[in-house]
Length: 200
Image 1 (cartoon, helix red, strand yellow):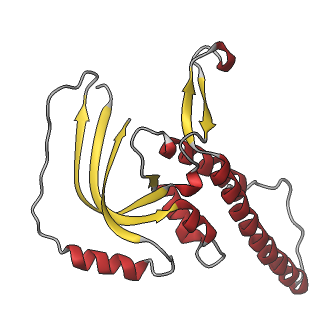
Image 2 (cartoon, rainbow, N blue to C red):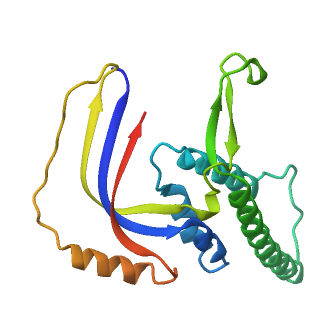
């Protein structure tokens, strides 16, 4: 079957990554996790988007993947349960603050991904983050919301042209207004049309 190259045209959010990270708080963390997970860096061939995926995935696993506790709990009184709930709320707040600060640090200290082909990284080489072309904190994050058009291309050796189309049966102004209303808890974003190309 070979590889599949896909292109997707959609309408969604555009915001500087650093500006979005700075807005993380308890009230919006769950919605922002969806945006970070589903978004990508506006990128050509600089490998910023790949480095963003690596950085965010590592932070997500560190802060939000629950670790199961061994053993069983004894029956607690109502007073103990309330005390535990209060501790959980405090711990959650501290965890979100810590996640935000670590995310800011990692976004400022990581840039585009640079491939290295040398024995130092093993038989197949490896990669390092480089700040030669800027850091992730300064890049723009795109988050697709409404898909307009998509096309796939299969095969190992791809040549020639392929195309796809759709009817103009949607109201862009209405879509834009709906997005602005739904994501009004975020400051400083633009509603844009974007094209995402990816290979798998």
